[in-house]
Amino acid sequence: MAKLNARTITAPLVAFTMAGLLFIYSRSSIKAAKRNAERHRMADGGQICWQNENQRRHGKREVPENQDTLRQLVFGTENKLEKVLGKGPGRSQEQEKFREDLGKKRDP
Image 1 (spheres, rainbow, N blue to C red):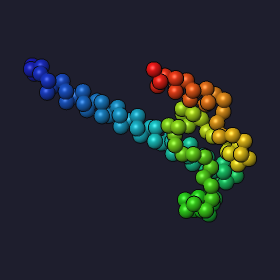
Image 2: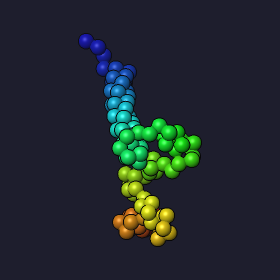
Image 3: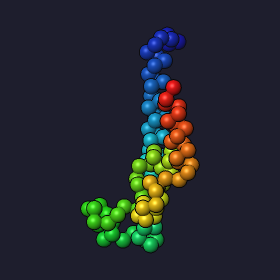
Image 4: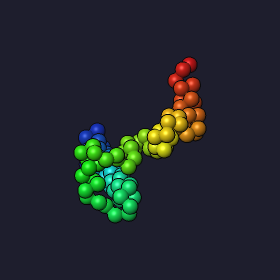
């Protein structure tokens, strides 16, 4: 029977934690890549146009949406029509309320 000490407990725990983190990271990055590819397909009319994609990567064409996934999860996507027309900062009322509530929590 093996003796129970810190080394016999820590090594399997660390290995299990690393495997879990790697699994979660790989799944989330695959999903993000699929969402990003779908956005680019929809921006091109349902099928990827490599010429448009090349122009996007070199700054000659606008990217379909902001690619910051954490920001999209918290605040949602920005309304680009309002930005183009100049009708406000491009945030919804829900986003403004969330930001106000967040500011109240920070200020004691």
